[in-house]
Each structure stands twice: as C-alpha cells, then as structure tokens.
Length: 189
Image (cartoon, rainbow, N blue to C red):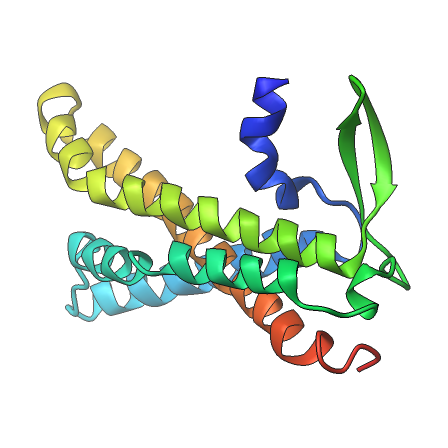
C-alpha cells in the first residue's frame, strides 16, 4: 500500500492510450539523438559545450519548475468545469488504480489526466534537479574508480539518459500547457 502511494506521483508514466508513448518516449528520443548529433558535430568543429556547464544551466532552470507544476495541479483540481469531469473521448486514457486492495483499470477524466500529468512533472523535475545537483560529485568520484575509457563511456550514457529525461520534461510540459491553455477553456478544440 505504501509503495503504491509513494509511486502515484509518477503514475502518468503508466497511463495507456491516446498516443502517449510518442509523447513520453518518441519525441524525447528523437530530440536526444538530434541533440547528440549536433553536439558531436560542434565538437568536431572545435566548438566545445562542456557537459558541466549544460548541467548547471539546466539545473538552475529546474529550481522553479516543481513549484509551477504544483500550482498548475492545484489550479486544475479547483477549476470549476463540468467538461473536466467527463471521460476522455476518442482514444481515451486508462490507468490501473488500487481500490480495496485490488488493482483495476479505469477510464480517466480530463481532470484526472491533467492532475496525473502535473503530478508526474512535479516529481520528475525534482528528481532530475537532485541528480543534476549531484552529477559533479558523481563524475569526480568516477575518476578514482574507473579507467578513462570506462569513465568516458559512463559519461556519455549518463548524458544520453539525462538528455532524454530533459526532453521528456519539455514535451510533457508542452502537452500540459496545451491542456491548461486550450482544452480547459475550449473543450472541443
């Protein structure tokens, strides 16, 4: 029960339907690959974008995001609209929920969907901020543990994962803003 409660802020990752896999995985993966190709091209031209500087810049921007996401979550929860309490039409969206000790699938309303979305963004941005804040210490400690080649490979893998995560936050944020700006006020747009 406690595990269920502690993982619910990330439940948006487990919602099924509505082409969400493109949003959560497809677009971030493509953007990550394009970004690394551009970064590699710049590197070959002698233009070096240090990963630490990129991590610092992203980390400083992430400081305020959890607060914004929580404010959006509060707004969606309290906004009066019959439309938000209707089940998502079209492809729909379903999630597994625990009720009386039994997991079962439910169709989401727009309000539930947007709440899960901003809950996910809140915790994902907070976790990403913590990882980026610790990345220098982790990278520095690798100097004593691994050889240069292994350290470089781990840095590349870590950078790919972080880049994917950042692009996931960006695309999911854009999706959430679309719902806040467009769908809440023009439900049949």
